[in-house]
Image (cartoon, rainbow, N blue to C red):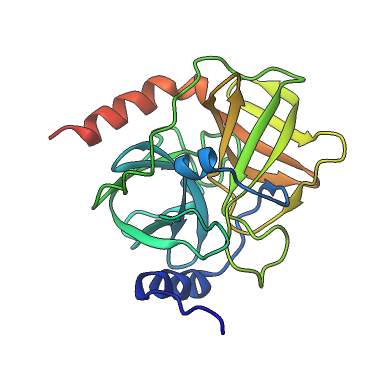
Length: 237
């Protein structure tokens, strides 16, 4: 017999199904490891479902196109180690701060938004460390997102894949697949973190768009001052 989902699981699953709508980026077929799970959440709105990365116990970074001021947003994630279960509802969103230079119809503007949560995340979630260095062409990076690996009917799960920087320019990187590593478009991955790995994960980018088999990510080094200052203000008593 299939195990019944707890009520908090069911509430977010229903909300995710109703929200619908893909927010494309690239994910791989592999389930995310425990470290990536601790950094990454799902952000659900009335008409969207995206990913996000933890910046503080009650602060999350996501793509600006995933959120609208005044919209009721919820944040979810896995609180246990069974990554095949749908995410649990963790908190509602109390406030939204979009990047001051973001313009919805300008694809060249910084597609970033920082969310203040109504309730701090459980202790298994930890803030990602910002890397001050912008990725360069040829760098291999780890990307993660709450997508469905191209199957819109599948349960939302957190997946990860290795990607390589194909192009790098001020404030942006274009990522492509590495060798035979899988990279499929999936709903829900915009806002997913991009990590460098040198003995530890450090946050270098945020996925925001897809073109063919390449993904566009904001390089966060160019916006680190705004990110840190916004987190400081939102975390202040």
